[in-house]
Image 1 (cartoon, rainbow, N blue to C red):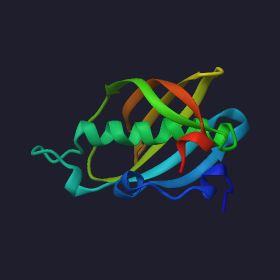
Image 2: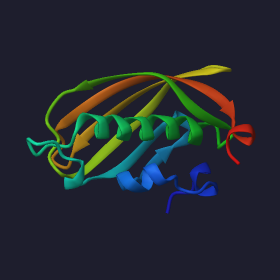
Image 3: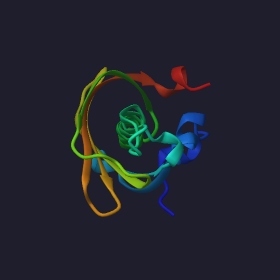
Image 4: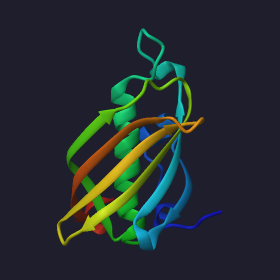
Length: 139
């Protein structure tokens, strides 16, 4: 099992709802891969995973990329997130990947993407994230 700073904090309820599972990470590169459950309960009337749920998955991929890169020293709060929906997401496993593109003293910039089990690109995102000392943010 891959050991990261995420092992030292409880899994938040929102991550549990999304079926969040760490698959792989390269903390030194600011890169992470997460697996989510695209549940039927997340679907819109057309039968596809609703865009807000996909956005939540992206947000819950990009923030942890910063957290593992900083070895848990910095917690993240999203300032902006721009999402592009590329293809409809059918229920099933959805993989999130994120890379920290720039880590500053108070702000980080991150890119993320979601793919279906068959490799179809579902959504991409960019985010600017405020950095907060974990000791102050996590209680």
